Image (cartoon, rainbow, N blue to C red; front, side, top):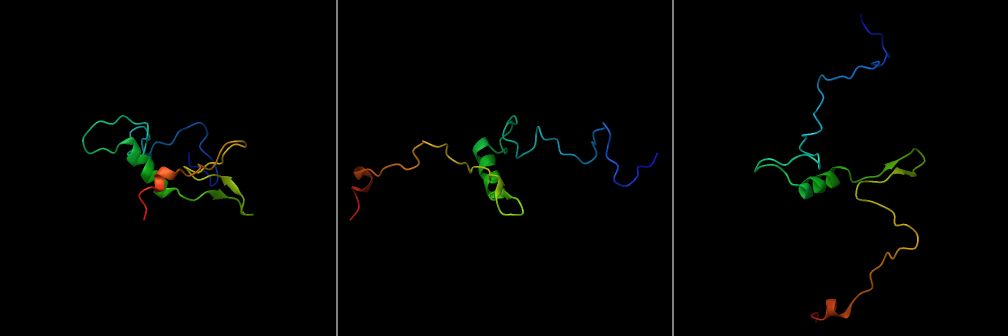
Amino acid sequence: KPKQKGQANKGKARTGNRVNSTGHSLNVDRQRTGDGMRDKSTIRRLQMYRNFKPKRDKTGKIVKAAPFQSTLPSGTVARIAPNRKWFGKCL
């Protein structure tokens, strides 16, 4: 039975050209088996490079923050005070 245009798959999962996400090379939670496979920190770094912009709506407001971008809850300290020992060896 041919499908008409605009008709969705009803209850059937499409398995044609789908990537198996459990063993994907950019999946952080996959099992690492092998010497040439990326570790968790490398995968996170590569995802950060790929998805560095937040999602915005048409008015320009951020709908979804970029990965590794978060807002601090109110009342938390956002600045670390400088320490003299950090700058002791400067000229």
